[in-house]
Length: 171
Image (cartoon, helix red, strand yellow):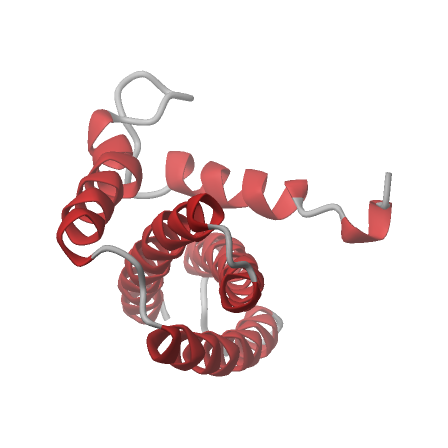
């Protein structure tokens, strides 16, 4: 409906990067169980483990999470600019295979960073709505989603860090 606001490509590129880099299984084109475990099952288990004993998230924590996610979006956008400039950087004496590997890793990291920006923006929207909705069912759903997205963001940062360290091995 709104082609300029279509985020489907960001989501698809992120999952393609998971499938084609580091998590490759013998059955090409399918996510290995470890990928599902790390990015879906463990976050769900942690979300339930945190939500059940703690209950609703305090309003002060919500405000702090809005600030943290806002700062995080700005830092990730800065990282995207750095990745873009790094991709177009010419390194003297770099052979074709190293350049190809560097470009592939940068492409995947860029997809992951884009996805993290998207997750952070969705988290900010959920957090703002959380401040203004009073219905307990809506608040409970938002609490669960906020915890889940926060865990996803942390896992995504770890993924980005591991790929950036891999990038510096190639460069």
